[in-house]
Every structure is written in C-alpha cells, then in structure tokens.
Amino acid sequence: RRQRCGSCMGRYASPIDDDDDFDRSRRVQAAGTMRAPLAFLGGMVAATLLLIAYQQAMYKPPPPCPTAEAICPNIKGVLGEVLKGCPTPECPQAKCPTPRCPEPRCPEPFCPKVELPESVTKGCPSPDVAKLVAEHRSKMLQHVGANIIECAPGKDCRADRAQRFKRLGQQGVTLWFTGLSGAGKTTITEALERELIFKHGKTVYRIDGDNLRTGLTRDLGFSPSDRGESVRRASETAALFADAGVITMVTLISPYREARNAARSLHRDKGLPFLETYLDVPLDVLRRRDPKGLYKKVDAGEIKGFTGVDAPYEEPLDPEVTLRTHELSVQECVDHVIRQLEARGLLSGEAVDNPALAPPDGGVVVDLIARGEALL
Image (cartoon, rainbow, N blue to C red):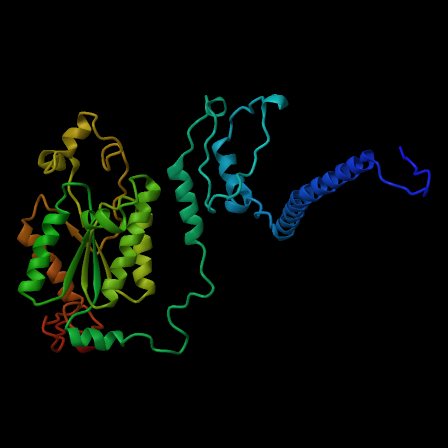
C-alpha cells in the first residue's frame, strides 16, 4: 500500500516495503551461501568423469590364455592314445560349463597333465607308458640333426689315433663280456683289470651294469626295448673310451644278439677293435652257484622275466673269445684273454698286420709263421 501526502503529493515507503527489502536481502545471501558447495560438487563430478575416461583410454586387456593345443602341440595325440578304446561319455549340454580363461593372469606355459574324470577312465586300459617312451626314443634315434657335425670334412679335429696309441703303448679295444647271471663276468673282469694295470702297466676301464644303472641308464627298465637301449648306450660309451686308447671291458648280460651285433658294427665303422667274449656256462651250474640268490627268488616266483629262465638269452654265434668258467679257474680265464689281446697286438702301441706274437712293451713284432713261398 502507498499513502500519499495531500499537500505535497510526496511518496513515502511504508513499513511494508521495508519488510520486502529485508526478505529479498536474506534470499540473496542464502543463494550466495549455497553456490560454493554446488560448485565444489560439480568440480568433483567432472574430475571423476575425466579420470574414468583416462583409465578407459589407457586400459589394455590381458593377453588371451593359450589353448591346450598351443601349449602342448601333441596333446590330441596323447589324449587319443590314452582314450583309445574308451567309451565316449554323455554330457548334457546344460551340465557342461564352458571353460573360462582365468583372469587376470594365465598360467605359465607347460604341457598340461591330462586328468580325466572317472566316468571316462572307468573300464579303460592303462596306457603302456614304457611302450610310448620306446616308440618316441626309436623315432628320435632315427633323426639326424642337420647342423650337428662332429668334424668338418678335411679337418683334423682330434689327435692322430695311431700316434696316440703309439704314445700310450697300447691300442684301444672293447672287450664285450656277455653271459647269464652268475657266469662270472664281474669276477673275471675284476681279475683281468688288476692284471693289465699292475703287471702290464696298461690303462683299463670296466663298464658294468652296476655303474651304468646308477647313472647313464638309471632311467631304463628291463623291457626288451630298454635292454636294447642299455646296450646301445654302453657301446657308444665304450667306443669313446676305446678311441681314446683305453682297454675297455663291458660286462652286460646283453641277451639279444641284434643289440650286440649293433655294438660290434659301431666299433667296426669307427675302425676300433671289438672282441665279443662269451662266458658259456650251463644253466644248472649257474643255479648251483647263485652268488646273489637270484635264481632262488626266480624259483620262488619273486622275480619275473629273468634272463635265461623265463626271458630269452640269444647265445653268440661267432664270439672272438669263449670262456667256460666252470671248467677253467679265474686265473686261467684271465691268461686266456691276455693271450688273445697279445695275439692281436692290442697290448702294443704299434699297428699289427698279422696275428703273430706281439711283445707288450710296444717292441718289434715277432712273426713265427712260415709263409707258403718260404717253404718252396
């Protein structure tokens, strides 16, 4: 409301107008007080949105987890061999969850262990691990590395063998002692080793099943394939020793003729002497000897697959040396082997072209054999 002055028609603010101005001032002050918090909240929202956008821009998803085929390329072949002849399990689609790759890290690459549920493996034959290993080993032995060259053509990679033998005063040779358990292989070779070292001054080394089984062949069993591999490793080792000029004695049952012939061929191809020494002793004599009590265990059924009893032994057809240890003493056997070495000139450092007498000190060969032309 407004009241007008009658004389001067002047306009004056009423008390009501003063109240309106005061209310307006309070509203303006209140609005100013709320503006600062709202501005702060708005800034926080904007910063959060910027941070989220930055993280999304910089985020790199982890690499995909490698599949079983990528980790182990032969996994299908392994599974196929394991599951050969097994029934295919039924699995309702609703109960078969899809495999997920673990996040955020994938396991380190390795060939995964095949673990199958009992519903799959029940009634299935166990895989013949030894057979699988033997097949793999046979395949790898047939593989020849293209970039593996022992010695480049036309280059002398080692000292001359003849000069080495001459300097040593002996020739490298492998004496391969074969025979059934209890025939005396260890006994004869131990005595022969002492005789050659301490009486003839020769360098000798003995390779037997015990020192092989504790190291070089301890991963092998007694299957035909593993026995063949044991002979192969022993023959390769013996050839290295013989090439170095060492008189090497190998004492292995080595029941299979094919494996022994392979050892002979290996030495022949390398130009190294190889003397197959057969300890020919009847089985009934071996049963009576039985130094380790093995035949008694075989008869009691505690040992299966024992060579010469319920596992085969193929006798040598044409051995260089034959020892019937049930008819000869240990010293007589040793003397017989040494005579064979001397006759071949193997205890001399000089090459011998005939089987005449050869002194062990590397001297001149004495040939007492009269030639046909000398008798005319």
